Length: 332
Image (cartoon, helix red, strand yellow):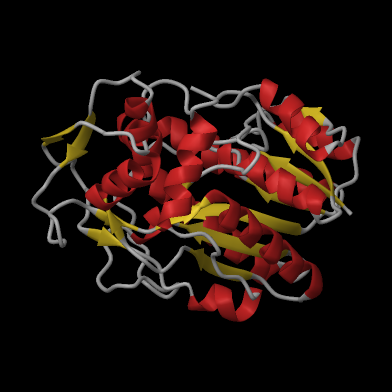
Protein backbone atom coordinates (compact mmCIF):
# COMPACT_ATOMS: atom_id res chain seq x y z
CA UNK A 1 0.00 0.00 0.00
CA UNK A 2 1.50 3.32 -1.15
CA UNK A 3 0.95 6.43 1.01
CA UNK A 4 1.84 10.00 0.00
CA UNK A 5 2.95 12.21 2.88
CA UNK A 6 2.75 15.93 2.11
CA UNK A 7 5.19 17.95 4.19
CA UNK A 8 6.93 14.66 4.90
CA UNK A 9 10.34 16.26 5.53
CA UNK A 10 8.99 18.40 8.36
CA UNK A 11 9.11 17.74 12.09
CA UNK A 12 5.93 15.67 12.46
CA UNK A 13 5.91 14.40 8.89
CA UNK A 14 9.35 12.81 9.15
CA UNK A 15 8.36 10.89 12.30
CA UNK A 16 5.20 9.65 10.59
CA UNK A 17 7.23 8.49 7.58
CA UNK A 18 9.39 6.38 9.91
CA UNK A 19 6.32 4.85 11.56
CA UNK A 20 4.64 4.12 8.22
CA UNK A 21 7.66 2.29 6.83
CA UNK A 22 8.13 0.35 10.07
CA UNK A 23 4.53 -0.88 9.67
CA UNK A 24 5.10 -2.10 6.11
CA UNK A 25 3.66 0.80 4.11
CA UNK A 26 5.37 2.16 1.03
CA UNK A 27 5.88 5.92 1.27
CA UNK A 28 6.43 8.84 -1.07
CA UNK A 29 6.97 12.42 0.08
CA UNK A 30 5.72 15.71 -1.37
CA UNK A 31 7.43 18.78 0.09
CA UNK A 32 8.22 22.29 -1.21
CA UNK A 33 11.19 22.60 1.20
CA UNK A 34 10.01 26.01 2.42
CA UNK A 35 10.31 25.04 6.09
CA UNK A 36 12.21 21.76 5.90
CA UNK A 37 15.65 20.45 5.03
CA UNK A 38 16.49 18.26 2.03
CA UNK A 39 19.07 16.45 4.20
CA UNK A 40 16.17 15.02 6.22
CA UNK A 41 15.44 12.74 3.26
CA UNK A 42 18.88 11.17 3.46
CA UNK A 43 18.50 10.63 7.19
CA UNK A 44 15.08 9.05 6.66
CA UNK A 45 16.51 6.66 4.10
CA UNK A 46 19.37 5.72 6.43
CA UNK A 47 17.01 5.21 9.37
CA UNK A 48 14.45 3.16 7.43
CA UNK A 49 16.91 1.46 5.03
CA UNK A 50 14.46 2.40 2.28
CA UNK A 51 14.63 4.52 -0.87
CA UNK A 52 11.91 7.16 -0.53
CA UNK A 53 10.71 9.02 -3.65
CA UNK A 54 10.54 12.81 -3.17
CA UNK A 55 8.35 15.20 -5.18
CA UNK A 56 9.52 18.80 -4.71
CA UNK A 57 6.18 20.46 -5.39
CA UNK A 58 4.20 23.35 -3.92
CA UNK A 59 0.52 22.42 -3.50
CA UNK A 60 -0.50 25.96 -4.44
CA UNK A 61 0.36 25.10 -8.05
CA UNK A 62 -2.42 22.84 -9.30
CA UNK A 63 -0.81 21.64 -12.54
CA UNK A 64 2.35 20.45 -10.76
CA UNK A 65 0.29 18.78 -8.06
CA UNK A 66 -1.89 17.07 -10.67
CA UNK A 67 1.19 15.69 -12.42
CA UNK A 68 2.34 13.98 -9.23
CA UNK A 69 -0.96 12.09 -9.03
CA UNK A 70 -1.24 11.37 -12.74
CA UNK A 71 2.20 9.80 -12.78
CA UNK A 72 1.86 7.77 -9.57
CA UNK A 73 -0.67 5.64 -7.76
CA UNK A 74 -1.47 6.33 -4.12
CA UNK A 75 -3.79 4.45 -1.78
CA UNK A 76 -4.02 7.30 0.68
CA UNK A 77 -2.56 10.68 1.68
CA UNK A 78 -1.38 12.06 5.01
CA UNK A 79 -1.46 15.84 4.72
CA UNK A 80 0.95 17.95 6.79
CA UNK A 81 1.99 20.56 4.20
CA UNK A 82 1.01 23.98 5.50
CA UNK A 83 2.16 27.02 7.44
CA UNK A 84 1.68 26.94 11.21
CA UNK A 85 3.02 30.07 12.94
CA UNK A 86 0.22 31.92 14.75
CA UNK A 87 2.05 35.27 14.85
CA UNK A 88 2.92 35.12 11.17
CA UNK A 89 -0.70 34.31 10.33
CA UNK A 90 -1.87 37.44 12.15
CA UNK A 91 0.70 39.59 10.32
CA UNK A 92 0.11 37.99 6.91
CA UNK A 93 -3.31 36.30 6.85
CA UNK A 94 -3.47 36.14 3.05
CA UNK A 95 -0.47 33.79 2.99
CA UNK A 96 -2.25 31.33 5.28
CA UNK A 97 -5.44 31.22 3.25
CA UNK A 98 -3.42 30.86 0.06
CA UNK A 99 -1.04 28.20 1.34
CA UNK A 100 -3.20 26.18 3.73
CA UNK A 101 -6.68 26.44 2.21
CA UNK A 102 -5.91 26.68 -1.51
CA UNK A 103 -3.15 24.09 -1.18
CA UNK A 104 -5.58 21.61 0.40
CA UNK A 105 -8.23 22.23 -2.26
CA UNK A 106 -5.65 21.58 -4.98
CA UNK A 107 -4.60 18.40 -3.19
CA UNK A 108 -8.20 17.17 -3.05
CA UNK A 109 -8.70 17.90 -6.75
CA UNK A 110 -5.54 15.96 -7.59
CA UNK A 111 -6.67 13.04 -5.41
CA UNK A 112 -9.98 12.98 -7.30
CA UNK A 113 -8.02 12.63 -10.53
CA UNK A 114 -6.96 9.09 -9.60
CA UNK A 115 -9.89 8.27 -7.28
CA UNK A 116 -7.64 8.30 -4.22
CA UNK A 117 -10.18 9.17 -1.53
CA UNK A 118 -8.52 8.44 1.80
CA UNK A 119 -6.96 11.39 3.64
CA UNK A 120 -5.49 12.01 7.09
CA UNK A 121 -5.61 15.76 7.75
CA UNK A 122 -3.30 17.51 10.19
CA UNK A 123 -5.55 19.90 12.11
CA UNK A 124 -4.85 21.58 15.43
CA UNK A 125 -6.19 22.36 18.89
CA UNK A 126 -6.09 26.02 17.83
CA UNK A 127 -9.52 25.44 16.24
CA UNK A 128 -10.99 25.55 19.77
CA UNK A 129 -9.75 29.07 20.52
CA UNK A 130 -10.52 29.95 24.12
CA UNK A 131 -12.27 26.84 25.45
CA UNK A 132 -15.35 27.20 27.62
CA UNK A 133 -14.63 23.97 29.47
CA UNK A 134 -11.72 21.63 30.19
CA UNK A 135 -10.71 19.09 29.12
CA UNK A 136 -11.58 19.88 25.50
CA UNK A 137 -13.56 17.22 23.65
CA UNK A 138 -14.31 17.01 19.93
CA UNK A 139 -17.77 18.55 20.38
CA UNK A 140 -16.36 21.77 21.82
CA UNK A 141 -17.18 24.93 19.91
CA UNK A 142 -14.85 25.88 17.07
CA UNK A 143 -13.82 29.50 17.61
CA UNK A 144 -10.34 30.18 16.28
CA UNK A 145 -8.81 33.51 17.29
CA UNK A 146 -6.19 33.79 14.53
CA UNK A 147 -5.93 33.13 10.77
CA UNK A 148 -3.90 29.94 11.29
CA UNK A 149 -6.65 28.35 13.37
CA UNK A 150 -9.31 29.72 11.05
CA UNK A 151 -7.59 28.11 8.05
CA UNK A 152 -7.81 24.75 9.83
CA UNK A 153 -11.52 25.24 10.56
CA UNK A 154 -12.22 26.13 6.92
CA UNK A 155 -10.45 22.99 5.73
CA UNK A 156 -12.21 20.79 8.30
CA UNK A 157 -15.61 22.09 7.20
CA UNK A 158 -14.69 21.65 3.55
CA UNK A 159 -13.71 18.02 4.15
CA UNK A 160 -16.90 17.32 6.09
CA UNK A 161 -19.06 18.77 3.32
CA UNK A 162 -17.10 16.79 0.77
CA UNK A 163 -17.76 13.59 2.71
CA UNK A 164 -21.49 14.37 2.82
CA UNK A 165 -21.53 14.91 -0.94
CA UNK A 166 -19.54 11.77 -1.77
CA UNK A 167 -19.49 8.94 0.78
CA UNK A 168 -16.58 7.26 -1.02
CA UNK A 169 -14.30 9.74 0.75
CA UNK A 170 -12.70 8.69 4.03
CA UNK A 171 -11.21 11.38 6.25
CA UNK A 172 -9.42 11.28 9.59
CA UNK A 173 -9.22 14.83 10.92
CA UNK A 174 -6.67 14.87 13.75
CA UNK A 175 -6.73 17.82 16.13
CA UNK A 176 -3.49 17.57 18.00
CA UNK A 177 -2.15 19.63 20.79
CA UNK A 178 1.54 20.55 21.38
CA UNK A 179 4.02 18.07 19.89
CA UNK A 180 7.48 17.91 21.48
CA UNK A 181 10.31 15.39 21.69
CA UNK A 182 12.21 13.53 19.03
CA UNK A 183 13.02 10.11 17.62
CA UNK A 184 15.15 7.73 19.70
CA UNK A 185 17.78 7.72 16.91
CA UNK A 186 18.50 11.38 17.82
CA UNK A 187 18.46 12.15 14.08
CA UNK A 188 15.04 13.79 14.02
CA UNK A 189 13.60 16.58 16.12
CA UNK A 190 12.06 20.03 15.92
CA UNK A 191 14.60 22.44 14.46
CA UNK A 192 12.70 25.41 13.03
CA UNK A 193 14.27 27.90 10.68
CA UNK A 194 14.72 31.30 12.32
CA UNK A 195 13.44 32.21 15.79
CA UNK A 196 11.38 29.38 17.33
CA UNK A 197 7.64 29.88 17.67
CA UNK A 198 7.14 26.98 20.08
CA UNK A 199 8.29 26.58 23.67
CA UNK A 200 10.47 23.46 23.55
CA UNK A 201 12.75 24.43 20.64
CA UNK A 202 13.13 27.83 22.33
CA UNK A 203 14.22 26.10 25.55
CA UNK A 204 16.65 23.93 23.59
CA UNK A 205 18.23 26.90 21.85
CA UNK A 206 18.73 28.55 25.23
CA UNK A 207 20.27 25.30 26.51
CA UNK A 208 22.61 25.27 23.49
CA UNK A 209 23.68 28.87 24.13
CA UNK A 210 22.21 30.20 20.89
CA UNK A 211 19.71 32.38 22.77
CA UNK A 212 20.59 34.16 26.01
CA UNK A 213 17.40 33.49 27.91
CA UNK A 214 13.88 32.18 27.51
CA UNK A 215 11.06 34.72 27.31
CA UNK A 216 7.98 33.64 29.21
CA UNK A 217 4.96 35.54 27.94
CA UNK A 218 3.00 36.38 31.07
CA UNK A 219 2.95 35.19 34.68
CA UNK A 220 -0.57 36.23 35.60
CA UNK A 221 -2.57 33.41 34.05
CA UNK A 222 -5.17 31.64 36.18
CA UNK A 223 -3.00 28.55 36.62
CA UNK A 224 -1.11 26.91 39.50
CA UNK A 225 2.04 29.00 38.87
CA UNK A 226 0.77 31.89 36.77
CA UNK A 227 2.19 30.64 33.45
CA UNK A 228 0.13 29.22 30.61
CA UNK A 229 -0.83 25.54 30.68
CA UNK A 230 -0.83 23.36 27.56
CA UNK A 231 -1.13 19.70 26.62
CA UNK A 232 2.27 18.51 25.38
CA UNK A 233 2.44 15.23 23.46
CA UNK A 234 5.52 13.28 22.39
CA UNK A 235 5.92 13.42 18.61
CA UNK A 236 6.37 9.63 18.43
CA UNK A 237 3.02 9.16 20.17
CA UNK A 238 1.56 11.60 17.68
CA UNK A 239 3.03 9.62 14.78
CA UNK A 240 1.54 6.43 16.21
CA UNK A 241 -1.82 8.19 16.28
CA UNK A 242 -1.59 8.88 12.57
CA UNK A 243 -0.97 5.20 11.82
CA UNK A 244 -3.97 4.26 13.95
CA UNK A 245 -6.12 6.83 12.13
CA UNK A 246 -4.95 5.57 8.73
CA UNK A 247 -5.73 1.98 9.66
CA UNK A 248 -9.18 3.10 10.83
CA UNK A 249 -10.21 4.64 7.52
CA UNK A 250 -8.73 1.73 5.59
CA UNK A 251 -11.04 -0.64 7.49
CA UNK A 252 -14.15 1.46 8.16
CA UNK A 253 -16.65 3.18 5.90
CA UNK A 254 -16.83 6.50 7.70
CA UNK A 255 -14.86 9.63 8.53
CA UNK A 256 -13.74 10.77 11.97
CA UNK A 257 -12.52 13.82 13.88
CA UNK A 258 -10.30 13.02 16.84
CA UNK A 259 -8.17 14.83 19.44
CA UNK A 260 -4.60 13.62 19.92
CA UNK A 261 -3.25 14.77 23.26
CA UNK A 262 -2.19 13.34 26.60
CA UNK A 263 -5.15 14.72 28.52
CA UNK A 264 -2.76 16.44 30.94
CA UNK A 265 -1.81 20.11 31.18
CA UNK A 266 1.69 21.37 31.99
CA UNK A 267 2.67 24.99 32.54
CA UNK A 268 5.62 26.79 30.98
CA UNK A 269 7.45 26.60 34.31
CA UNK A 270 6.64 22.88 34.58
CA UNK A 271 8.37 22.39 31.23
CA UNK A 272 11.38 24.52 32.17
CA UNK A 273 11.83 22.84 35.55
CA UNK A 274 11.44 19.32 34.15
CA UNK A 275 13.88 20.05 31.33
CA UNK A 276 16.39 21.34 33.89
CA UNK A 277 15.89 18.31 36.13
CA UNK A 278 16.23 15.61 33.47
CA UNK A 279 19.01 17.22 31.43
CA UNK A 280 20.88 18.99 34.24
CA UNK A 281 20.97 22.26 32.28
CA UNK A 282 19.87 25.53 33.85
CA UNK A 283 17.50 27.58 31.66
CA UNK A 284 17.60 31.33 32.44
CA UNK A 285 14.32 33.10 31.73
CA UNK A 286 12.55 36.40 32.06
CA UNK A 287 8.89 37.28 32.17
CA UNK A 288 7.53 39.55 29.50
CA UNK A 289 4.05 40.75 28.60
CA UNK A 290 1.33 38.36 27.55
CA UNK A 291 0.65 37.93 23.86
CA UNK A 292 -2.76 38.93 22.48
CA UNK A 293 -5.10 35.95 22.41
CA UNK A 294 -3.09 33.73 24.77
CA UNK A 295 -5.37 31.62 26.95
CA UNK A 296 -4.89 30.29 30.48
CA UNK A 297 -5.16 26.55 29.91
CA UNK A 298 -5.71 24.10 27.08
CA UNK A 299 -5.64 20.31 27.29
CA UNK A 300 -7.41 17.46 25.57
CA UNK A 301 -10.09 14.95 26.33
CA UNK A 302 -8.51 12.04 24.45
CA UNK A 303 -11.10 9.40 25.33
CA UNK A 304 -12.44 9.20 21.77
CA UNK A 305 -9.00 8.35 20.39
CA UNK A 306 -8.63 5.66 23.02
CA UNK A 307 -12.06 4.25 22.15
CA UNK A 308 -12.12 4.20 18.36
CA UNK A 309 -8.41 4.14 17.49
CA UNK A 310 -7.22 1.98 20.41
CA UNK A 311 -4.52 4.62 20.84
CA UNK A 312 -3.10 6.25 23.93
CA UNK A 313 0.19 8.03 24.63
CA UNK A 314 3.13 6.00 25.95
CA UNK A 315 5.60 8.77 26.80
CA UNK A 316 5.52 11.11 29.80
CA UNK A 317 6.87 14.61 30.43
CA UNK A 318 10.33 13.35 31.41
CA UNK A 319 10.58 11.48 28.11
CA UNK A 320 9.48 14.56 26.20
CA UNK A 321 12.07 16.83 27.80
CA UNK A 322 14.90 14.31 27.54
CA UNK A 323 14.18 13.32 23.92
CA UNK A 324 13.74 16.96 22.88
CA UNK A 325 17.25 17.79 24.04
CA UNK A 326 18.87 14.55 22.84
CA UNK A 327 17.50 15.10 19.33
CA UNK A 328 17.93 18.85 19.12
CA UNK A 329 21.48 19.12 20.41
CA UNK A 330 22.49 17.13 17.33
CA UNK A 331 20.53 19.48 15.06
CA UNK A 332 21.21 22.96 16.42
